[in-house]
Length: 452
Ligand code: GLU
Image (cartoon, rainbow, N blue to C red; front, side, top):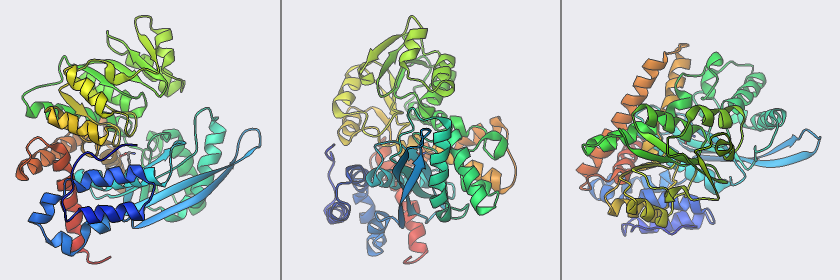
């Protein structure tokens, strides 16, 4: 549990109180809302029409929330019951868009925090996508392919009625990758009798997927870090980097860091940390995580000059640039202090809300270039929107072209956040820049569309 570090404007405090009251026990959702509301004091002074239209209150209430039972049988024939969610948060800018997370920690509060963040992140991409998120408390760890397939089929048998390329377009998140998207898409196609490519993103390349989607979140996060450093006359070249996690985001963040001349010396999973001062061997990491689906402990067994720290804290490893790419609240106030003491100059979030509110304020007070997830990791969902574009035109683009588009989008997001922060008198504050720019875009669309 974390406390909220910053202050709210007195006009906004009652709105937040109401959010607490209407959504009891959902601490992650409260945290995500508080962080955005902290930024909006300046906005309602400058643009009182948002208060008249109750835009803040409306944005904090999902348009629709679906909760359903997912029954399935394991390989031994035993019956299991999971709970699944889809929160269709805001469709002012386009169809609901956001991933599905399969993890035992999933409950409504987690999906609402992610869906809420997604509204702002998606707005920042400049592409026509609204915000949504879904998931289940299903634990895929140790499950066979057949079990994963049966679970995905059962989930989609209920979820399909809420989806559509113009309605709601899920993708992956923690525990959901191309394999799961395949099973979900197969069942959607079977039930609806429609080959509706644009209803899911993160598909395989042979059946409607986009090149660069797999790499996009990690690459995009590093492009954002590069822009933050460039704005300060610095670069990633030769920098020592630490990337937490070892999933899709972490692996491709590490790949892009290496391509840009940085050195990645550590990564992690929920059991421990790998430190490899010579630089992480990406081929080995991909073999262990993507092909064999094993724990990173194996990395140290197969690579003798790497160290495995069981239950270690990755933020104790000195670095110039930190990329939190594991999960929410993985980087605390004391972790942030340790990073600053050890000389860290930039933090770009590959995960959603990985830094606690205390940690964010430590980075900001120390003048660290800090890129919040909703800006820094927007490359994943942006490339999902590029996948939707390709599907709509029944086309597929080259890797080079798609990567260029991603790079341009990340530069534009950086520019938007940077300029907005200056305009509102808080230069260098990417949190305020991102929240305000995204809120203005969504809020204006909501005002234009009337009371719906
Ligand atoms: N789950 C990813 C995110 O947090 C991607 C969502 C998508 O591609 O729709 O943004």
